[in-house]
Amino acid sequence: MATIVVKQVGSPIRRPKVQRETLKGLGLNKMHRTRELEDTPSIRGMVNAIPHLVRIVEEKG
Image (cartoon, rainbow, N blue to C red; front, side, top):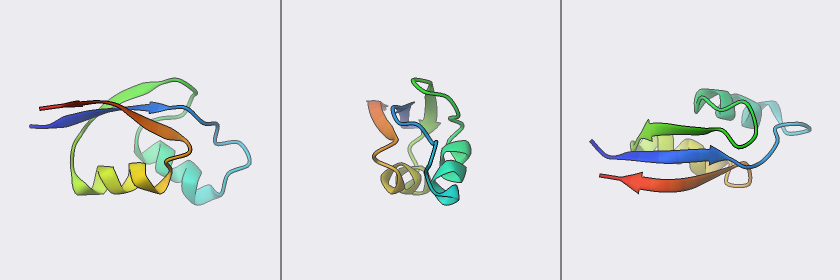
């Protein structure tokens, strides 16, 4: 299965609640943390909703 590595590069401080909740949904909560997630349309949509807070570091598979 294809996966992507997502890194948090922006702070959720002073961001709308929806954006903070999206970060939590991705499993990110502190700066410079990374997570390896399945490459699904829902995960891609969450990443695309907050491009100023996260970056895709690597795409596997």
